[in-house]
Amino acid sequence: MASSMLPVVLVVLLVVAAAEAATFTVTNKCQYTVWAAAVPAGGGRRLDPGQAWNINVPAGTTAGRIWARTGCSFDGAGNGRCQTGDCGGKLQCTQYGQAPNTLAEFGLNQFQNLDFFDISLIDGFNVPMIFVPAGSGAGCPKGGPRCPGNITPQCPSELRAAGGCNNACTVFREDRYCCTGSAANNCGPTDYSRFFKGQCSDAYSYPKDDASSTYTCPGGTNYQVIFCP
Image (spheres, rainbow, N blue to C red):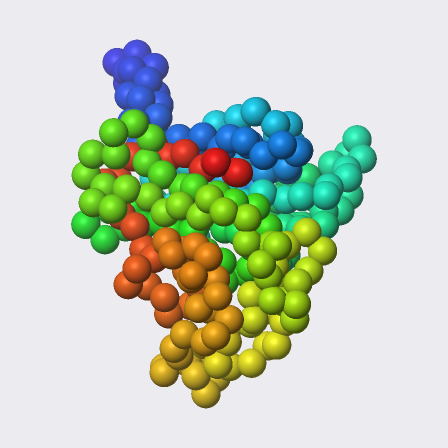
């Protein structure tokens, strides 16, 4: 009897798992190739202009990130290097990318079963991005964050980097820019964070920029991440 029930139990478990996973569709609308990266689920994928990549992300995933890498070259074994967003020289990322890189960040099925998500420029900027719920966005009070403009040409000279624009924390490593040490509990905006906020009002511009930069949707929502929208 028990053995005859096993296939049914497996089918039920598979259906439940599929229902709980969120699908992230990552689309490259840039006029150049990017190498999309996603952790902890996904790894990496080359996306030529117009190509898309679907990633199934398990329910309850935290500290998730999706970003574009640019200026990459990989060998047949998936080893190489990227100008921006490099993740240890691997095509398949298992660690976060190097600045500068525009980040889509998320935690799924968190407080009250809500997804929390944002675009962050705390690690700087390399490509324009939008991060929005798929479909109608029902239950998502603010929709999703949008950072559609190219910040790099306006980047202050002291923050400029090959292929992008660094955040002040990356360049100067000072508490007031990183919200660490002496500024951990009383961190506020700076001229540099105001520059990023002025260019991209929906995005995190420094670590304590929560009020205007965090978005929510019901757990189980699917999402679109679009580069160069």
